[in-house]
Amino acid sequence: MVRGSAVDRCGSQQGNGWFCMSGFNRKVDEASARVNQRVAQAADRLEKETEDFIAYLNQEVVPAIRQHSTKVLRVAAKKMSRLADYLEESQSRS
Image 1 (cartoon, rainbow, N blue to C red):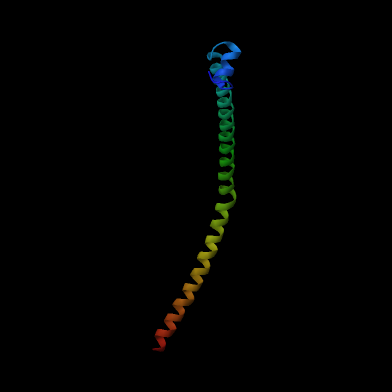
Image 2: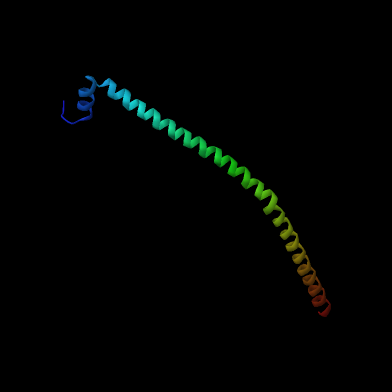
């Protein structure tokens, strides 16, 4: 055995390496459980945030777009009407 190595430390504590591996596995399982818990919390938060964002879009953004788009259409209609008037005047002059 190499002095100071992980196997030496584990073997000298319990007389075999299996205790050390089971301790390592326990630590890995605990870390995995913490990661899984954080991922689940993040997924829950993301789901709620997404619902809130969609509600915001539906309540605030969509009506604003509809209001502004009708205004834009009205302005475009006025300008096209003026253009038609101009074209009619220029044809009558020719």
